[in-house]
Image (cartoon, rainbow, N blue to C red; front, top):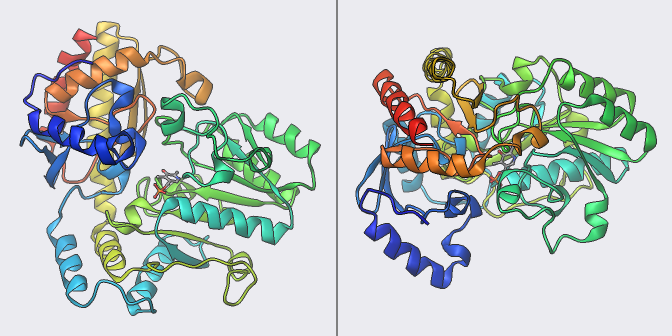
Length: 431
Ligand SMILES: *Cc1c(COP(=O)(O)O)cnc(C)c1O
């Protein structure tokens, strides 16, 4: 394990303390920095485009709470909304007006969502979407794609994306064979395999679930007609098409990837940005499917803290701050960064692949196209780890795994982009 050139004594002490009580010292595996063979940083505060570790080192943050923060950290209006809500009570366990307001904001931007239910995490949203699809179709099996991550519920934890593949666990122990056997995992961007599978099980598949733009294997874009094809097959085989837009919702644009590719899924899962950095997620879609939920329908789903007033207030404030100009700005600075990286690579003959969708991007240490999990896995993770180390030493905090997306926030200035580019040029030299 290498040591950073920065002073990280306090982070190390905290990690030692955490290791005694918290498995691996972390509450979510990828935070451990295991994939980049470093001791993880403990963060003490964050503001705008920057985060600060326990030793008070400052970093330009490209994780942004794994994409949940589109405005960067501790934005004034958002903090104000949280404070105002908190002063009125932290949780009611009853309905309140904010839930309706947030539902109105989301459905206005995503017309495929006729009805919505709020939950606390993307994992819960996906779990509910799959339960609904099974109830609606009266079928059991689902199709998912390798490299896509849909949270950590049992049905979607067979051969999943980033966290799991980074740690090299193909299937998680504790997930029963029966559950895993009901999930068919197919390669992303390969429509013919989907077609063949559906022809083999024409009356068994309840749902196809997909990240329309993959973010959890690093960024991978859908090829022409892949998503359209999934939509057509879903109709033909009368199954439920679920777009997992927990990451892409409000990131790719106000209407998510479904707006960009003009596809209407039957169900959509959201999370991350809609909570503005607080725990909040949602499942929504066609009225006739959503109305199967209790209390009007037979499909059970509930949550003590669902629609929490502070989370909802935070989500509303964050969504209201997003203007069309926000996406224009994000597109501009993101293109600037990634295009200049690519130009530099060409000039110097550096073989890495840059994939970008709006303000999310990945730099793969891989000299061929990355279009599915298999091609992503050809990346040189040792080189990535060295690159991550070099960037971190220069104050740039990237996602600590080759198989994760980096996120640009609107708090970043053109100067930050320039600084990142300079750090890139120096770091890539050393790899
Ligand atoms: C983050 C993510 C999830 C899981 O959300 P949690 O809130 O971490 O449970 C599910 N699907 C996608 C596409 C995600 O990016």
